[in-house]
Structures are given as structure tokens and as C-alpha cells.
Image (cartoon, rainbow, N blue to C red; front, side, top):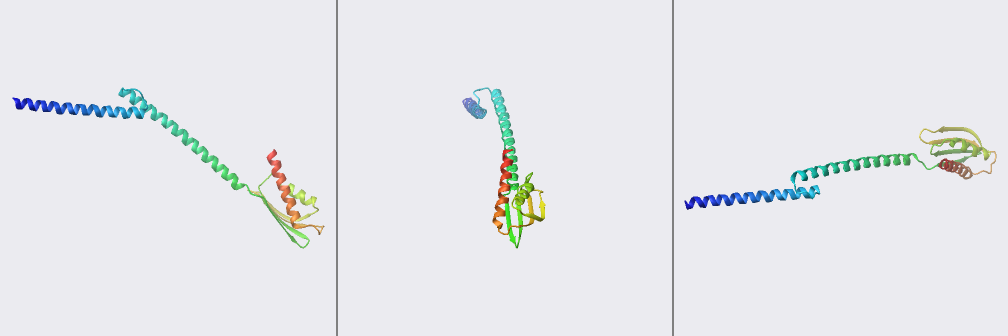
Length: 174
């Protein structure tokens, strides 16, 4: 009988040890859940509810961050496209005898051609032939004749650049 009692006590001790171990493990899991849920509650159902609420809040924050990120990417693309399409004006004028070969490339503007032609007219230059394109940017190649032989290619180039810059200034004001 003593042997039987000893076995029963040993089983009870083992069961008590397992039960304590299970309770300690459950308590530890609840503590972890409490930390993750950022909750003061000690009830398992409240902790799970708080935990799920936190997950939903985090999902909403993540979605807001994703939207903001995609908006920033779209803004970046638009800025890069604008920078790509914005060109520094290029004016090249070569004197060939009594004529000037004029090449202009710049950003497309509403009255770009008109302002350049007005400058050429003010300088007394006659346009013999011109090719103009304004698909994505403005470009013009022209052959002009100067009755005044004292006129230099650099003077013509400077006058055209000033006309383009004046046009840019007017676009910024309006």
C-alpha cells in the first residue's frame, strides 16, 4: 500500500507541476499578447479584441502610407517630365557672307515665333527662308539677310536670346 501511495503522490506532483507549467505558459502568452496589444486588460477576450483593433489600425496606417508614397511617386514623375521637357534656350547664329544662318531651340511658348520674328525685324533683318517646328519644343532654322554689313552674329544671337528670356518672364507673370 505504501508503494501505491507513493505512486499516487508522484502522479499528483507531476500533474501539479504540469498544471503550474501550463498556467505559467498561459500567463506568459497573455503577457506577450498584452504587450503586443498595448493593453492594460488582463482578460484574454479583451486582449484579443485590443490586439485585433491594433492590427486594424496598423493596416489603415500602412494603407495611408502606401497612398502617400504613390502620390509622391506620381509627383516625382510629373516633376521629372517637366524637367525633361524644359530646355535651356539654344541660339546659334553663323554669318555666311551677307546672310545669317539662325538656329533656335527652346521651350514651346505661345508667341515664341512672333517675338523672335519681331526682334529680327527690329534689327533690319529679312527672313529669306525658315523652317519651324513646335511639337514638344520650339525649334527654328532660318536664313536671314542683313542689309547692314556691320551686324555681327553674336549681336543677332544676343537679341534672340533676350526675346526668348523676355517671353519666359512674361509667362511667369501671367
